[in-house]
Length: 197
Image 1 (tube, rainbow, N blue to C red):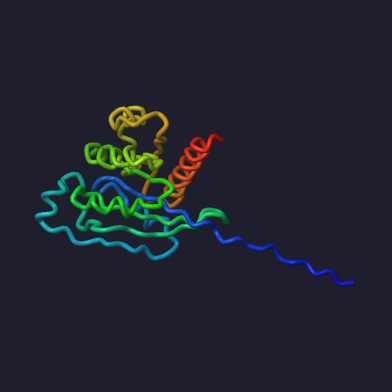
Image 2: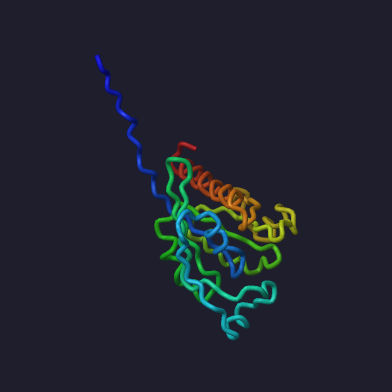
């Protein structure tokens, strides 16, 4: 007697949208590009002299391009989650795009550069006001943490229920871990809202 065994039915991964946000030159495009399994859709444009003056490129003089609409990439997390990454432009003049980019998102990674915290306030304020769960990711430029995370939390005035993580936007595993922190935070907030957390 021959017994036929059926192969387990493989479920399609659940699509999840996550926003990568932050100020100008904090590493959003690098973050998306480092983990994306597909070629990154990016809307990088060359910086003009006028834009360089407006965007205060002094701290990031090597930056010659800027995102003018969005960055888009994708990464599979385990067998269950297909993470779609939407990177925002960092300049205030492109802020009108943020509502569209965050629509339907599960959560956000707000990237900060501790050398230029003042440029991070608009992103933190946006997500606090929108109610979208977010994690603050301190991008460790040159592998250095210039300030203690408690000091960063105080300077950004974010509440204790907003996770702060360190990561390096140039290191795939580090970016993946930051994104997992976003997923865990979003799940925890959803469970708390439903009364199951």
